[in-house]
Image (cartoon, rainbow, N blue to C red; front, top):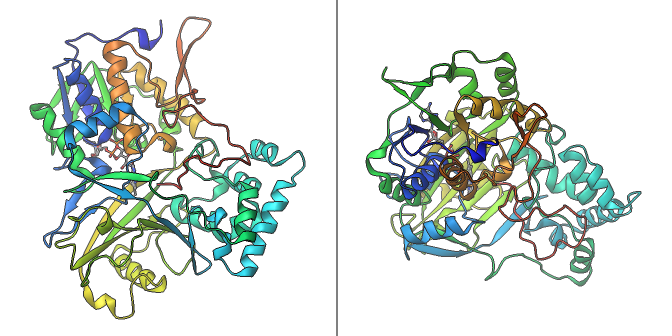
Length: 512
Ligand SMILES: Cc1cc2nc3c(=O)[nH]c(=O)nc-3n(C[C@H](O)[C@H](O)[C@H](O)COP(=O)(O)OP(=O)(O)OC[C@H]3O[C@@H](n4cnc5c(N)ncnc54)[C@H](O)[C@@H]3O)c2cc1C
């Protein structure tokens, strides 16, 4: 019998740990299905997890990194509509890359004519060489054993040197050789060499933005407003300031930081699964599980908000920018004040930047006390702050996200295939951005749906699709979990094979 066909009963005690999108999605769906015996706890005093927003005393609203809604699910769309109504702004996306001290419209590879002539030549020569790989570029991409090899096979040396390698190291804070390539899917725009050549030779712009490339953003309260509203529908089920300190897997009992305890029949955890296995699980936990958890890798990130006084408000129509150059510490800067007229105290007189700076064991963190100045200096170096404009900075905001990106390392799925099934055998279901550790399904829409699909599995016996796990029976009749991606893993849409050419028209994103 597979886990999907064994739903729990209506009076089972469910505990959800984490009031971020995953936990909220699960709670919302449990309630919708009529289940009442559940509690959702979070150690923080606020709702939303990494998708929370904060308004500072001056009236600037900040998100934990630029949050853009790319929904792949009808359920998510309906939920947003039902809770937000018409209280959202619709943003036309305009994205740029800063590389080789120049501004290049995104996608970079379609607009290399914005580089110097020498750099354009280097990029196009690399592309042509990559296209001439023995067996063809598709074969080289298919054979790539890691992200570094993938980049070289797909983009060629020039684009990799000028943009892909430095930018990706800035985001991931891990060498590309350590990273797999299976997460890429729709996340990295792959090259159409004919198009790149045509744009270069004919001097065409190819921005990949416009009316079809729009996203919704809550009108007031930032990204987090959506999650606050989901939380509000759950009423007394939600308990904030309630940290879980121990989960006794032998007795199915949770211990809270205040010393209280509660039993559970099923537990959904959205906390980082490495922390769960290292610090929280007690009882008979195999070394193999603790070892596998310890091998998962992640990066942290400083989110730095800069609020500026300026007559006329935001000086640009840009949404966000990616940075490859080393004269600034951030990998991405968002004109947050362009996301809604209410992100600053007064749209006519203020604007705001949200800047993201990563760190890891491979990329030492800038000391916390120095990061705001480093970001301001970087904004000046990139020409985003004009000389003397720093005098008009009226607000700065810093959030240190110790867990920002779950690194899709080459061996990640191997470790998850040890962890996840064992946890499930103890009634502990680890889901969400750091619960499942699958970057390719770790955005807000995926996270909400991981929670929703988990509730559907628990109560209706439906298989979970987003996490890309397939269940199979062994010869002895046991259930095992396989972590090769199912056909609908990742985006909620059919998985598209990565090909070297003809990706035109497919929406692609750099890592977010
Ligand atoms: C820099 C950055 C940029 C992003 N950009 C985008 C974007 O553009 N678009 C997009 O859709 N998504 C984006 N995301 C991803 C989005 O934030 C996540 O998808 C989402 O927050 C994950 O939800 P979650 O519930 O799985 O985890 P989290 O949001 O991490 O929530 C987990 C919760 O568990 C709680 N918790 C942890 N330990 C305990 C404990 N011991 N006891 C009780 N509670 C505990 C935490 O307090 C937290 O609230 C971005 C994330 C980051 C960091």
